[in-house]
Length: 185
Image (cartoon, rainbow, N blue to C red; front, side, top):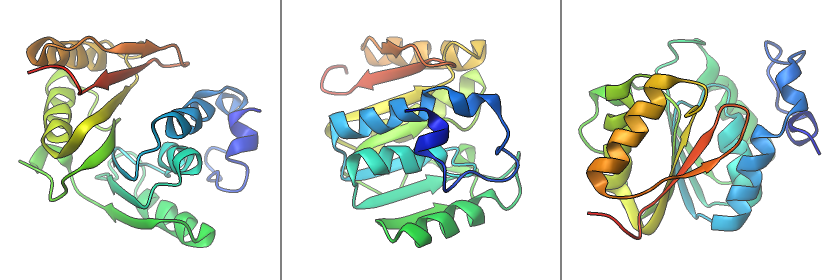
């Protein structure tokens, strides 16, 4: 199965002809959802909702929360919300908000946080700290683009070093870190 087959009914017209759909990045999210079985998922950087959808499809999570300031694609959160309403899945809350302006999240006991918004060193560190503050015991942080973007990798590595954990690299097309929280400071 490819990402195109997994996402066939939700792909936005801007992405419909993309070669990247022939890969397995979102299929990896699906399998991570199945493996970790989160009940509550928070995502920073929702865009059109593909990774959040794939995580939900694998996990059948009960609550999905997404943050995106729509800097890259105005209206993308509306598209993602409409897509989630069509599938009549979980409770979904998508917020058009800049994560860098947040000091904390209003959620607790989150099982999985996906970091994929600000692709700067400080942005990634800030979002990982937000994630750490809302996670359940044993919760997981995923950080996308760690092999595709030096700033993202540096920010994620710095956060892991400060926290005292070693991330696990999943070799997707852009690299994905799994940051365990059962250990660390």
